Length: 235
Image (cartoon, rainbow, N blue to C red):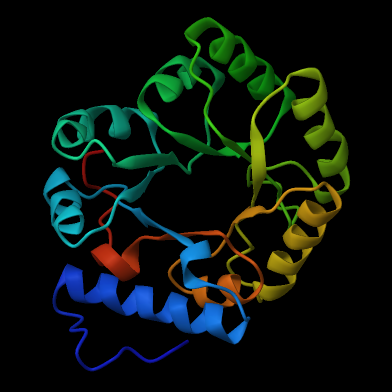
């Protein structure tokens, strides 16, 4: 991974954000892409609103949360001050949380099954609010992980777009933790390209520069911005 510039102190959240933005720019340049084509999503799950406020002060506007309830609790007051804040749902979405997700979030990254697609279609029609959606692909075919199987992706994409008329804008993946991520990113890019999709949500704190070089348009970075997490913390 690219070394942090000396002027971007890792002691401050603003410094870490600046360093990550530089790494994105350098990875994009290596791939002959524009850094502006990559959206940095600061994943603030388990961190308090104060951490989000610090990131907002440093110019960050895109944030990611894993849980609908945490997004509902943390962001309404922040949106009043920063109406340009964009909230991405990057964790698994249960069908019984669709109504809340559509009301409180701006982008969904984890559309992964027919029942969820149908519930989203119903809620979009009911509310008149249509959120851009990424379809999650389980590139490693891990049984414990959400996402449609790669071999089923083409049919699922077509069903979501053609039958349900969902605003599918791209694909998302989370490679297996113990495997080299590049082949998974390349596979996601291949599936997206053959389906006419140009948005790719892939890459996290440990591999976002690799993801950018392989076509990521959205990278989801948490601990590299906010620090280590305590998962016993209240959500």
